[in-house]
Length: 424
Image (cartoon, rainbow, N blue to C red; front, top):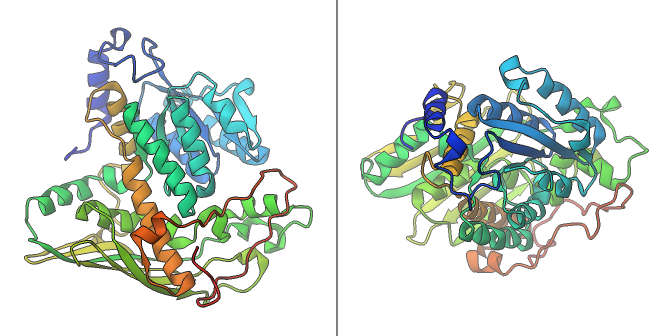
């Protein structure tokens, strides 16, 4: 795990065990004995479409055989882009018309399509539902981050995570830094004491707005859209479905800090608001800046800052870990292309875990804890309270709608105001 597993090296290892996958544990791979591993995709937006390319690039023994999305146009767009990949990739893209599913129950049909691996790439609110079903179906899972958008449903994810560990299912998260050579090298160096004892951590995601409605006519809601369709098409702007920036994006940086610390914080105080985002329905009800002071069990603080301001505001997506003898700083990596794409490497690592060519991987609980860390920070900023780990583990905040239908009314709560917003 300290060096990237090259595609050539992975394929050589797989070829050495080609006869009926003799190294595959039949209990771990539902398709044991098949020449190929079959994968399905749930969520066909930009990230899901990229995941198809990534897994096909990294793993010559994987075929894509089923896809689902709640919107037919998004499914069709993903099909076109995937079919147009280079021939050596598109030859293994084999999603026939009978395995193209549209609807809120499409995930069930993908899981019933004889696949070995499922890739979960829907907006985050659906992650606990889909992850739980994938574990129940005994599938290996590539699971985009975060693990949910509220404490109730992340705890549901955690229960399924424990079950996936019992079943020895491979679960690879979309926290790709865990498969990036630079971070793996530094993780080893930090654990070997190179920078001494960790005394402070800094997590930053200073970026630009994510405005999905820029592609809409006049950048406005289609008057024919129900609340459910509108909020799913503009999902990044609504708390229930995205979790706010600290959960949906900034998790990457906070996850690195938790990973290097080997635990999660126990309390946080935070503040934030919407300084730039207009109070219009297309901009939803999320903050555009949030700063937090997290405290780990040993008293070490992590300063967390995320914001989305339009250019030319400065950008900084990085982690800085300060030790008693040195510093690890990922800021110089920004804008530098890694020698091997971690978005591809994470799929190589997943397949190696499934086949037994590499260490067993199940990142579900680690990324769930990082998700709860982020939710803890969001709730502290929204409420103005200090929020502890015990409080978030007992929170009754459940943001999911009670039903999922294209015509459902889903009123969007107002922008949270500290002192008015109540932590529950």
